[in-house]
Length: 140
Length: 65
Image (cartoon, each protein chain N blue to C red):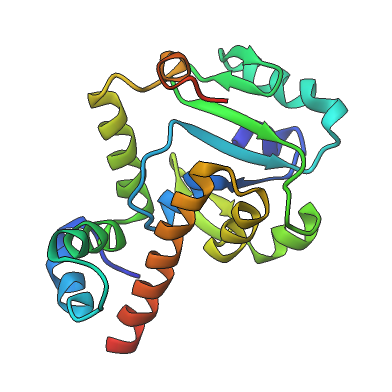
């Protein structure tokens, strides 16, 4: 992530890895980074990862040396552009850094737009977390 | 939330009257909500590693796309 920053590639953590960081009790095998790059420049991000010892699995998927799978995303269905969503991102600790993380509400919107079978299940968890966070704050 | 995993009983107290979830689900959510982002990710990784689902082998095992 630091290397992406050094290459001046803006990114934000999205998908269920972002939901996990915000309290969704689910498991996810990969980390999705939305990059502020056109898709045709996917090799710029891949090269950053490869220079750190990652292995390329697919055009947009790399495995880091600790086994973490990273998926580079260039467009997200159901949401506005990168810059608009980036402004809403929350800064959270992840792997020793503070990085921009997409809020649960935006993750939910993108999942509702795609609606694969797994997205329907994820939306249930996201809705529960949002509901419980509201209940928690009311009780404070 | 300025809590960590060890504070989950306190979070549970605050959500225990929420409807639509049984007690075990509330414990699950209380642990997840109480944890710090780092603890949440560690739980995710530890759980997947315990099932042998970490790294590229997980893609094959889960036939993920």
